[in-house]
Image (cartoon, rainbow, N blue to C red; front, side, top):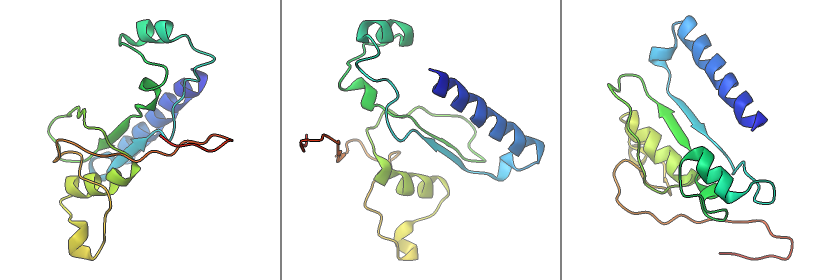
Length: 133
């Protein structure tokens, strides 16, 4: 929890600095957590669920990583429940910026998360003995 608190503070400082320098309205900012923060051995799923106000599954819920994008000129925020992964970041941000990767000769292997209704997400998981799911 200390790391999450520090991260919130640091992102807040970054945003305040961008605003102070007059850059916030010209900045696209993407924030993505690269892995889960709650280790199952250290956190009781019932306790986590009660604190977060959700039904928390120790195997699946901790794979829900936030992807937050601020883009200037967007009149309101939007919460998107679409499943995605790191490969989907480029096409999603490009869409928000009005760009098409294909027009620039870029092959994007992900999907624009704002314009799909289903997605397949590959996941790799480290296990010393080797495994997959």
